Length: 288
Image (cartoon, rainbow, N blue to C red; front, top):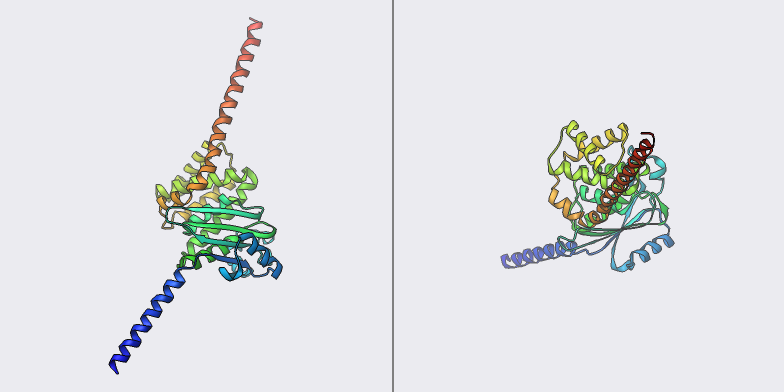
């Protein structure tokens, strides 16, 4: 009898381990907006290049989206239906975040990647999409939910909330200073805050002004205060600067072009100013 008990215990352990292994081997997850009709769901799967039977499909409701976005963004950007969808698959260690978007009008792939790194998402290929044009703010909810399924681990809840706030803050800034500029600004400020472990609001403000000046970006006092509030929250998270840098390596290359453009523009403006000065000196010399 004891021998049979031992055998059944071993069988139970084997099945438990095997079940955990299988769960951990989820290779692709698709999160679909719960309010998509059948045709739209099919459209999303075709866009993601997957068959319904070959991936794990989860649904995201409008209420789940509201849980993260309410109070951060206007109702028209959240909407009343869950439409945004996402595809997530794991990448090898060190490959970082690779992001694509389709029919996303307000959020860029760089904004998503920035926020995903804050949430703790690592080494993943992500596609955020919708069957028609949407703002894209709600897609992050599905991305985070899908990544948790792929990785088998839950992301920190506070980090997820702050990541959503980062996405919205960057999107708001993008309307005034340009989307690429906003993504570059928030990324560089965040990396500096995390790297130097800065928490004091005055120090945060100093860094914001320094980086904005480097990128030739003009900020209003309201925008500065909005970024300060965001960075105060980010500074409280247990973020690893090396991980953030590695995860964002691919988007860093595209954002670096902004710095290059700024430097080139500075050079052009300098030459124009020198030309004006030379012309004025010539005018003055005519009357001497």
